[in-house]
Length: 128
Image 1 (cartoon, one colour):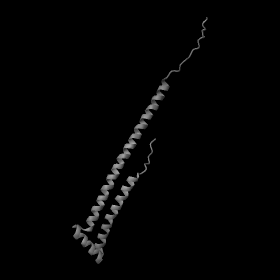
Image 2: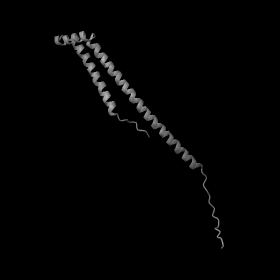
Image 3: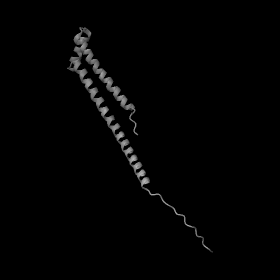
Image 4: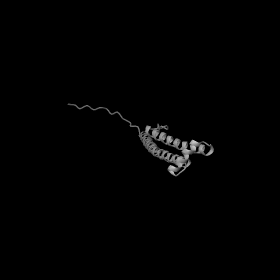
C-alpha cells in the first residue's frame, strides 16, 4: 500500500519561500503605488516619480511584473516536484501490481495442485 502523504523536500521549501518573498516584494510596490495614488504624501510622491524616471515604468507595473515572475517561478517548481512525485507513485503502483500478480500466481499454483497420495509398499530386504 502506497503512502499518500509525501514530505516536502528542503529544496522545494526554499524555492517556495523565495517565490513568496519575491511576490511580497511585488505586492509592496503595488501597495506603495496605490498609497501614492490615493494619498497626498509629498515624500512618497517624490519616490514614485524618481522610480518612474529611473525605470521608465510606474511602480504599479513593476509590482505586477515582479508578482508575475514569482508566480511563474512557483509554477515551474510545482511542476518539477509534481513530476518527481508522479514518477515515484507510478513506480510504487507498478511494484504493487507485480506483487499482487505474483501472489495470485502462487495462490493459483497451490490451488491447482493435486494432493500426492503416497502408497506404502513393503520394504524388501536383500538377502546376502
